[in-house]
Structure formats: C-alpha cells, structure tokens
Length: 191
Image 1 (cartoon, rainbow, N blue to C red):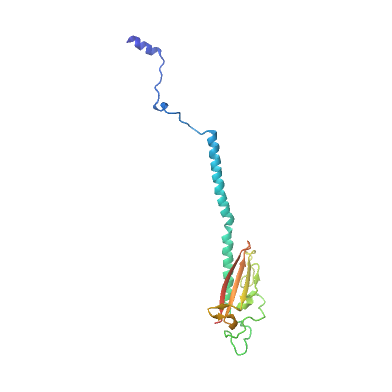
Image 2 (cartoon, rainbow, N blue to C red):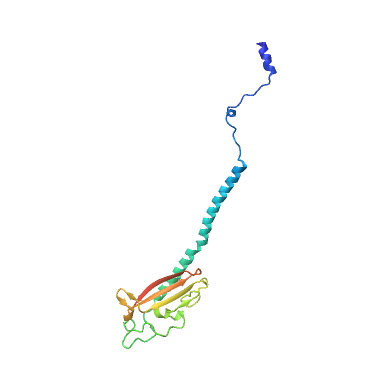
C-alpha cells in the first residue's frame, strides 16, 4: 500500500470534470453571419412598418380637408335656407303678398354684397374664394377653399314644384385645396 501512495504523490492531480463538460460546447455569442442576417431581417421589417406609417401620415390630412369642406358647405346651406323664400324688398305681383304662389321669388336685381342678402335667390351664383362670413368678410384661415352656390327654381320636392313658386333647390359646392369637391343640397319651400 505504501507503494501505491507514493505513486499518487508523484502523479499530477487531475481535476474532476464538471457534469457539463460532457455536453457539447455551449456557444456564448453570435457569429458574424448570424449578426448580419438579423440586421437584414430587422431592417426589412422596419422598412415595411415605416412605409405603412408614411402612407398613413401622407393621407391623414385628407379627412381634415374633407371635414372642412363639409363644415363650410353646411354652414352656407343653413344660412341660405334660413333666408326668406321671396325677396322682401321687392314688391310681389299685384295682389300677392310674400309667401303667396305668385310672389317675385328670384328678382333680377341681386343685393350688392352678401351681408345684404335677404332671400334665397340672392345667393345664386355666389363664388367665394376664400369662403366668406355672413358679414361679407373673408375667412382668411381658409384661403384655398372655394364655396359656390346655385339656386334652382325648377326643383321638385314631394309634389311641390318650382314652377308653381313652391320650392327652391339650393346646391352648395365647396372645393378644397386638393381639388376635391363636396356638394350638399337643400330645399326651401314657400311657407
């Protein structure tokens, strides 16, 4: 036995192997190829996402201009439809008061400016660039919008006809900076 102990002394001590040493070598990092591939994949994904975002940003102003066109057109239409059917400053055909079937609906003489408009037909042919307020001042914050008005005396609505001085059809068209147009239509009856 003694001989056996001496042999152990002369030998170098070999450390015991860890349990993980029998497994394949564990990688602690990425290779250059893997790094380049991941950069390419991330770059392609980001490019796709940025294209979608860019498309959305470019078209995000469209709803705003459309909403503005609608607001302008509806504002004009409401103002017009609240005016008198017949021109109150003109005399009606003899024996017929305003509101009668024979009143002078659309006289040839139109008021000089929008702040003087007192009946529906005064607005016929209005072409405002930029749109105007009721007091005939420009809405300077909307320089690229145009409001156009047409009044038709030959409109029909539920059996009422323009031919009998019963109804007027009003169309308001607003064109925005992108040259899209929004048209709204309303009817003013003679009541």
